[in-house]
Image 1 (spheres, helix red, strand yellow):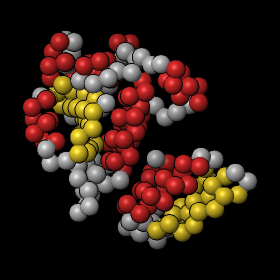
Image 2: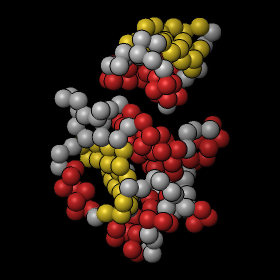
Image 3: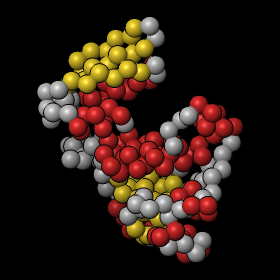
Image 4: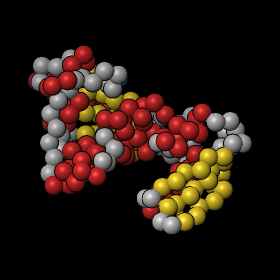
Length: 58
Length: 134
């Protein structure tokens, strides 16, 4: 929900990075991004923290 | 913009008042709503008490409920509010249950319900979508 709120506030073309210790986020966020048609820039795990970068497309 | 060509509206019939079921219903509703599906939640029977305003609120749960509270799982009422804020999520309190419980729209958490309505219309609307019962 925090990602959705942030995407609403930013401009088209902006990117948002989500940091999460929840592995579910690493699969749920890309699935949600595909569903609502934004762009998934990258998903990386570093030190048990998932870094997910999303670009707002609309 | 809700409901692309690939999706149908989601209708949730929430009757159980247990925290675990309310949690799952709220998660399903909010995720669907923020994923551009229109959602309608019809709240009836024991579930109605979860949404009473103030001290009248009735909340029950089992072992998993306790674990969710300890781990700080998102509050289902907050999830429903967020689903309404970020998506198209309508909530209807069952007219029959509200009458039996002697409650009006003003007795529920402010801003959460759109109306008190009947099951017949909800089920008629649900014919055009996917129905899940909790």
